[in-house]
Image (tube, rainbow, N blue to C red; front, side):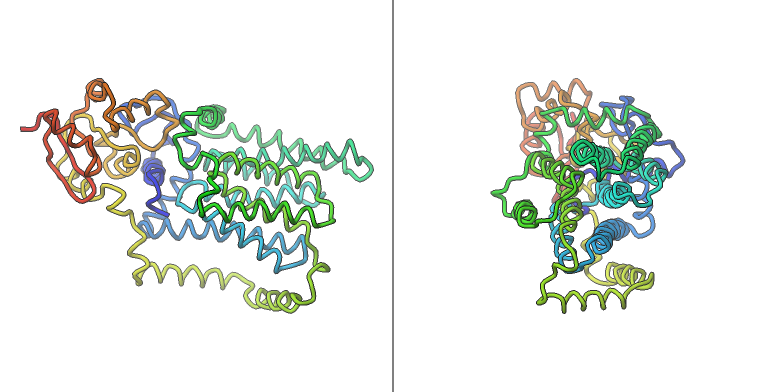
Length: 460
């Protein structure tokens, strides 16, 4: 969860900066190549939460926070599904399956907050659509939080927009069974959350950051998680199976799925087929929608005994004490068992030893570093050392990333890119061809470990 990519340390660097008493940065402050360029810090609050967890219990605190977010997400989906369907076994089966699907994207990043907020949004939205009590200010407060935690707050608009579209469909084709008040309240919610999205450090500019990234084919195609899922990869079989099962279940069940539910499921099914990144949405929304076709009366007699057993177990573990007990046990396991030793930033992925060396032996001038290491270097060395690039591709843009790739692939003109940016030294992975090329160009190696090398231009 901690070493999948370089995003987490960057978010933590932002959180550290804010907790030091600064406002969320609205321009790039961590690199010298894009210093001062306007940015949309729509993830700043998640960075604060991650860094607070880190201060309390180092990297293990981040793992605990991530686990809590995941557990709460699926506990809420399960609890709501039981209330709506009156069953437990089918709901448990679907929610466990959905959780397994999202595990393809279980890494400590802001989307874990989005999963929890998305689950809450689905539950509130369905209550509103069903004519039950769901105060509009709940949606406004939730969107205010979501808008400052992660750019995927757009999912809230998609859910409520699909619900309103479903209401309109039923209004035109089944008007006798449609509550006009529900349509009005859905419209008010959309208006309210549109206004609330302006309450962030850069107002409406946050929307353009999300759409600019989605609209850039180069950036999308160069990010593994944004390309469509490869169903030839065994890891995606569980996703394919749930997609197929959902079609099968909806075909054989005679209960009519409300238009809003059909639109929501169809929309997020399309999203996960277009981008593997959306598995965390699909794994939450699929069980939420599919439990609608079950009822207590449909549980076969063979399974009713297990249904009763599950209900009895739930009755015995109600209350706040069991969650607290579980968290305490988890903390103990991380603190005193070998499990805790692996929950740290890995020196095989991040340049941990090289960074410690640089704190004692700071280098002069501009640095060249790799894409995935920029966030970690900012977390440990900012503000004394600014990076060449980090994992925020939307900040650097297509043209600059092409230049970065020109350097690391030693394409024609790669030295000109370093000269243009006045690069004086480089921190790069050990064994890269770039290292040998720099040495051939007169650079000197001043540090090496099993992960990284540091080379300085013209070092005597």
